[in-house]
Image 1 (tube, rainbow, N blue to C red):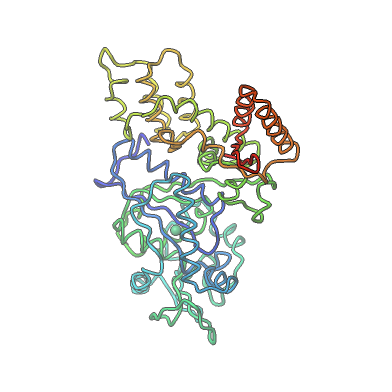
Image 2 (image 1 turned 30 degrees about the vertical axis):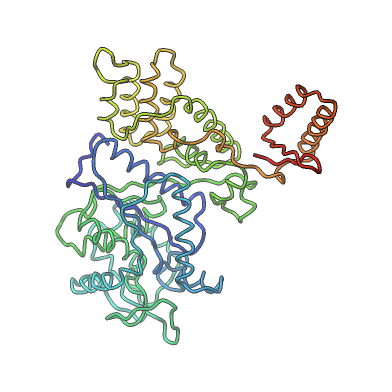
Length: 480
Ligand SMILES: [Zn+2]
């Protein structure tokens, strides 16, 4: 971050988005929280950002291969719905998760199906440049014509990569070559199909990101992000075709940032939806979405993170403590940039400024500048909240500044919302017995006109999150 300077007035930021054929799982969402922190970091430094995240609604074949069925078509057949319905449904699910995780909305969410004519033009230019060849199965990019192919992945193109590829394509010249256009097989009519110089068919998956990013951010832009799984195939291929297309001797994109995986070590939370849980599963288990965000930020984006019940429990407890501690400080100062944080009364260099608070703001800046060290930002925030020497005014600025980077909704999250609304079915038998015994005691106290005792019991029930309502047929209760 210290070395970063944008190439234009606005930083162009492109994040590879989801293929909308199933619910996004927790691991998928890590990529978008990471990109969101990057975007917040750029904003903190005062750079205007234009952020684009694509929606892949065509072109992504099963197993990331060049042949075979499209993931959207498979899902449509499985769910007996149209491909458009599938795309719309899972796009909404993705947006719901982004909102729940407090990810700042991108400026554009282009859909691949809206850019097919541009993809055909792009592939046609590559064909003119002589870096492609035709096969009955479509148009292929010849990676032997791409100098430096695979540099991003630091891979041994000749060996490891050929072994890694599983799909076999008749006539392909090099095993790393990939489809720009996937032609329909004779006698097979795809659900999603376009006419092209290479016959009816659909674009290859890698093509869309090159085309949509250039259309919306310009031919060259600053930063491209994605999961580390894209580093070895998808991004390598995006670079190869884009640099062949531009043919200007410049690197297509200046910075590539990849987030590591989430490792699932625990089956408990997973049981409701198969092997990999979704954000909704966490919510059903009583965890707040911000607890998941906090869990992610507790690790560095370039490190694998172990997802365990203990870890997410700890994150939920930390969130609860943070929000409870911060709530009395509200309203927080409106801060999104370092410059604003430095200028606010609680921190400004003037004699009445708070040197302690100003010091914390500089620590936050050093942490975000050191390759987005979110664990350090969390630690600094917690330290400031325990510091007896900081003024309340200064603390308001530090908390707001930390949250401008972390995005944990510290300015507005209600402490009562953190633990969510549990339902009675989440309680075990002894808990239900305890509640019903207290209610019976309260009824008895009221009968005896012992109002003080009745109020005490009511307060005790409230602590347990139980709301009692007196009806003509006796008291009923529910969880708040
Ligand atoms: Zn992509």
